[in-house]
Image (cartoon, rainbow, N blue to C red):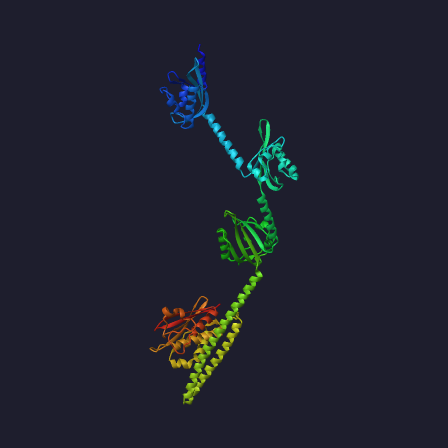
Length: 609
């Protein structure tokens, strides 16, 4: 039958409790298999005082075991301690080491002990301590005030420092007192019902109420409670308080702003950070004819665009919103009835203290009357400028055209006075009569120009072009004869053009006179007049072989006022300027092809519209 020691050894082995012994007479150390297994050493490992204590982690663990063994040997003091060791395989373990003293004849002969691996237990303890520390840290530092109440009697059992800060009470003033110390009298029943729902009915919600501070101030708070828990057969409830004073102030300010915004005559619209409408005031709804249901949740102005709404402005507005920038504009919008109105709009982005975009606020007003007055004023200004330009143009036409006829009549008078042959005089008198008739017609046309300038909506009339060219040739017949220029008129008799007669008279007179004035002295001169029809334009060409123009040098100045190119004493530089303006006033245009020393071709495009 096994003795008691053997039974003990087997029981310890089954319980995974290691045995060790230090023989003080021989200085030998005994480790059983469990002890060796805990240290992760083989059967050939021979423990001694030095290498046995080296397994203990350097620092307080190693120092402590050495002190305990020394006290046991010298003073016979037993020990029981928890240590952290590093095994031969470099694994960390926690052990519980118990040492007992063995005496013989009042003399210490050895120290026996047990060794147990408590790594798992210690890890759980460490984790528990860590969680406790975490919970305590949260409990102490959270922004919410935490209150723990005895659910059976409403007595405060614990609280955190945040509750101290909000209420002004210390722990000593709160703990042990009834929760009612924190609530005003008129809210006590409300709080009682709220806590009852949490503790007895399991209804969990958040509620706004008021907390009464130590100095009697009412502080708006948000209160919530967690589930009740049980310790030692007693139930407790955790309640959370959050100071919402700033939120309440903000809400009050917002209510005042919304009230003011709803009463103002300016239109106000608020959009979120993504540019989606969240609110608009009555002025905006009245102006647009829309309802909140139609605009909330949509991009602002999506129902206000129409065929005359400026696309560039809306694109710039969209770009400003994407870039979180302010924007100002006046834009033509449409109300629900599709009626036009001019809208002056300021868009302002709103940021928080950390520069995060919160909202866009659009403030606008109906400026239709102002805009219409601006448009009318601009129209009147443009009309005045146009009338001034027409008056200046008219003065140049009068000066230029009358001057041409005056020169022609003066020349005829000189010829008549110096002519002795009666038959020739009669011939020249006939020419003089034709010239005066043409002058009379020109004056008539000039009067028509005044009427045209007074009525910008005057319609063009149909004219036989060849007939008008013949009249101009007859009026300039003496000048043509004297210059010995050959005029080749290829315009058919039946060609009809739609023109303002006064303008056509001036155009023909100027182009034919220029061909004569700037003819070449080195060759026989000609002016060929022809036409083509292209689409809605009748193109009349005046081709000569005169002096020509250096277009590379003077091309941009050909149709400018007071621009001359050949140094003629009688050149004023306004003829082509007048001609260009007259043609453009009739919806046409004029082009020139020219080579200096070769000649020029002027093409006038007469619009049939």
